[in-house]
Image (cartoon, rainbow, N blue to C red; front, side, top):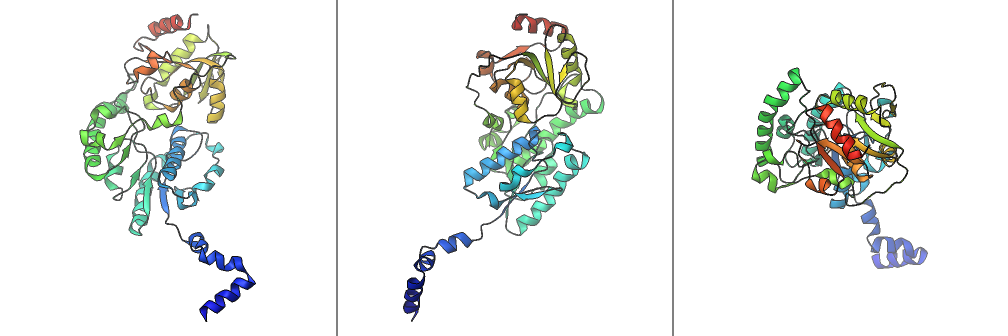
Length: 353
């Protein structure tokens, strides 16, 4: 009887029966498990958001996930990864408020516990500084972690409570996080190798470093003849960024060099300031610029590599951790930042002006 019905359907509509016979219908309608990714920032205009997007993209590729399996969310937004390109936060101008920076990640921990207990895979994408051991301690078991960030150095211009925190409290917090990572997590990613020296061997053995390298082909030699600007600076008011020193460099060099800035505007006379612009526009400016001086605490910043990968020669504080290959290839030049006056002399010598 069943065979006769099947034959009848095949005569009426052969493709209908083939659809079932080939399991296409079952495969198409199979409900794929959801993966919940808490990302406090997935905007395309700043480092945290750009890194989050790349991490999720690589997670999908590595595990053969479907883009609509991935739910990316925070307190303000919730969408599948295939719709993430629609996110546009121009009005925010690259800045996060107090809730987005501090409360959103903590709320995300409780939300991921809820989804974990329902049987879903969970991912905590960004805002993972090594000093914040609370996050590593409270996240659900088997949470996939985005790139862990941080540095052991800080700018000497940092004063007051911020200096006390970085000099005395952070080393203790690093140690606590190290212990938690040692026991609770299996596969780890670090955005740079800045923290490698303070990690246990077991944590190092289950970690991959320099996730930031995934953004670039650092072996390429970009040649752009139309470099009408001498220096490009990234300006951001943040305790560890050494903005006062950056301002000193700009004011000291603007008499002899054509200088542009991106990020926050300082209203410095004689300097062209582009403000908070998209990364694509930063790339275009880099292709028209010869040199840059990066902030004194982190060689591995996105801006630093944006410069290097677009042929901009980078000056940096010789005391911070860096890969010697960039110096050997003359893509980066270490100088002494302890004296701006002496640093300017070294810069002028290397720029041959």
